[in-house]
Length: 82
Image (cartoon, rainbow, N blue to C red; front, side, top):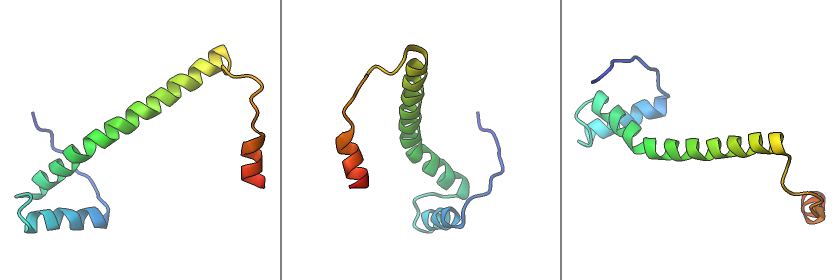
């Protein structure tokens, strides 16, 4: 089932959509936008999984405490301020 939505896009996206139509990659703006969404969907889903894992670890550490104690971070400080 299709749902109609109205969106504003960045000028560079609009130009990309026009190029897709001009080159025959898509037959319409609708098809072009759907292609862009579909191709980008996997990357967004990957990013969401990564962010959810980070959030899960942070919540676990806040609840149970950070699993590492007394780490030697001197090399990191030297790298940062050295």
